[in-house]
Amino acid sequence: MSTYPASCFSLPSVRSTYDADNNFISIHRPSAKHKEAIVFFSGNGLFFPNDEAVAYQALVTSNRYEWKNVASYLDSYSQLIFIRDVRKCWYWTGISSSCSSLQSLGVLIENTLLYGKYSFVGSSAGGFAAIYLAGLLAPSTVISFSGQFDLSPFVDSSNRAASSDLFSLLEENPSYSKCISNVSSIKTANSLGARIYHFYPVSSSRDMDQLSRIQSLIESGLISVFSLPSTEHAFMPKIFFLPAIINYLVQNPRCCSARLWPLVFAACLSSIFSPRLLVFPFCNWFYRKYLKGNLPVH
Image 1 (cartoon, helix red, strand yellow):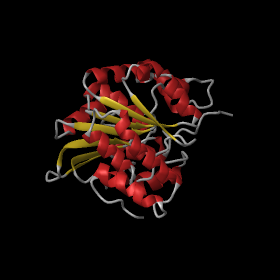
Image 2: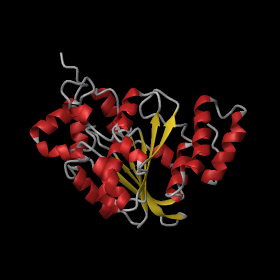
Image 3: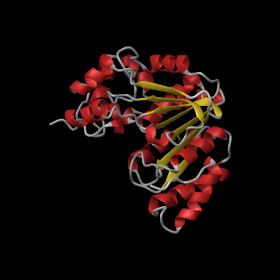
């Protein structure tokens, strides 16, 4: 029996959505305060498990894009772009039959951007794509939550974490090998002026393995990393702190880590305590400071 996760390439709703949908949404609000764009990349958590009923619910019924809930708090930006890889193969085959590679996705994004300043945000596979394309498009800021840096474990046939889809793609077309590592993208993006921030769960073995693969880049200051108290891959703080973190980094792309840590600390507290408890005033102060708004109560 195969140890690979089930392939999603053959799921009917995945095939039809990849062939018929753009899987790309651009929202333009010219009257918004910040004349700049944020591009959000969905990860492989778009739907799970790789089951037709689950995929249909996410892609067809809900027309789901990750980050749309978070972005609803970022209405002060003039352009928001949402992208999803319905085939869940780290964007190797692009996002649709008409945009079928990482390189063509870069061209699509470049042609859609309406402002000279823009930032990329992504989680897991979306973080990988955000960093990879930063080497081509040089955004001012890249924010990654558990984005991968090296996909070697996912194309290793002896590894239980390997992806049957990636492995098959690489076998069919060896040119995909240039999409395995993000190391050169990080170096290029930095040389073009981009600042990369990476958040990772400190107790996740898969995330720690990925971090070890770029240790020299961290030590060289080419990427800033922040640990979060979790064992969960692609762990993120509660939704009302995510836009605060994104907003602060987008508006302060060259900020020092010391200035960001208080917000990360408050976000971590919000993941442990309910904001309805005594921690709410403390967290709300940080939210007002970094997002210039009031903390929404859910």
